[in-house]
Image (cartoon, rainbow, N blue to C red; front, top):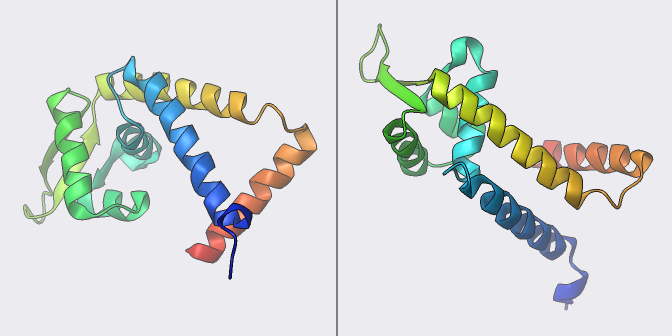
Amino acid sequence: MYSKQNLNIVLMKKIQNEMSKKINNALKKRELTMPQAELLAELMESEQNKMTLKELEKSLHLSQPVTSEIVTRLENKGYVETFGNEQDKRIKVVKITKLGQRQAKVAGKYIENVERKMLFCLTKNERKNFDELLQKVWETLE
């Protein structure tokens, strides 16, 4: 028998929910959601600021329909553009626009600010350990 209150997974989920809520509230001013900001950030970090839809799905750990919906919403806002691959038109390529790059940079600052506020209670050393432990857990799951 387990106690729900003592499970780390429950605590991690609560933290994730609270961070998502705070980040989404901050991003609302920019008419963005966390998943949209994450997709823009992926494109900003990619070679030539573009990726295939399949690559985005994989890197964001999202399904094809969810990724397509995010791309469609961003395209409607003028933050990304899509086109067929030159060699295979069935492959959809997503490229961030200049407007999308500006939005991604601002969104990144909002997200960093929320994270900084939420982790303010940790010392520098605790933060370093926390980062390392999170990375270790993530690598185990991949």
